[in-house]
Length: 339
Image (cartoon, rainbow, N blue to C red; front, side, top):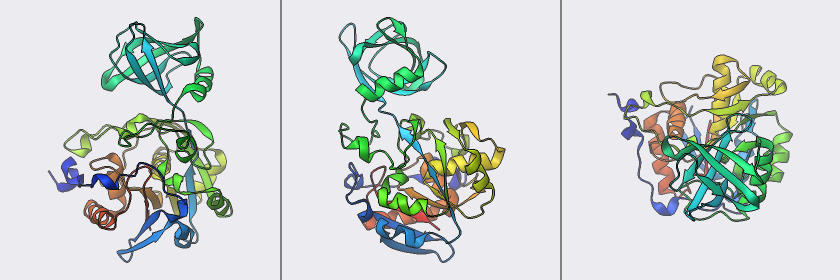
């Protein structure tokens, strides 16, 4: 097996203290590692200087998905505590969720605001199919999303070892978040404040929507990465954004999710549906030229996506450089701009 195929070859050691558990303030003070491929140069900067590095003729593509307050807590009739993470609607009245706690088909879980979930089917990885009721009336997606907004908590990633608080409702949401449906934030976007967004709007830019699912946190389990089956996430590209993307050869994606959306579209020309593309050194980007991204987990599909741009060995060398320079990693951490 070639090194680039082996899952273990995407591993690295990250000191626990470099996992960011909260955002840095102000956002402009977050570190920015800039890697210039044409000169093999690493520049250590910060997000206050981000706009100085943007290539002149680039189209900036951002993901405007909005994170749901997808975590709710309840109890079974027997009293056992349950944590439910909402994923998505399967049809008008049936939903996919992830549950921590023992449940079986037919169990009822009681939440705040008279919300009740009935387990219809138990799948792998804690995934459950449920119906939701309130006062004996079955609920549809629109009602569920409203109730989640009232009683739910922000779904912080599992490596952030704390409960979410009110500040996360702002800090774990991009300033241009618009279309509700994600259960994880497009984290490269979290680096921008309202002033930055004003600058972006003055430049050539467009939005896509890719609703990030819990699958983004599922590890790659195949020892050969070529055998990894990627999770699916719903996406949408408007007519105006499609035209801009079609007419640009200098695309800068803000985040891996914008990149995956663009690359899925580039291959099949679909502007909506389910995106399941796995970008890696054996499936390199064909439309995205530049990428802003955070620093990702060892052996994750996202570090493989970065490796598709700059190679596995170079990625691991840059990550070690970032570790040596005390960069903060993961969702609330610092960033890397690949030029």
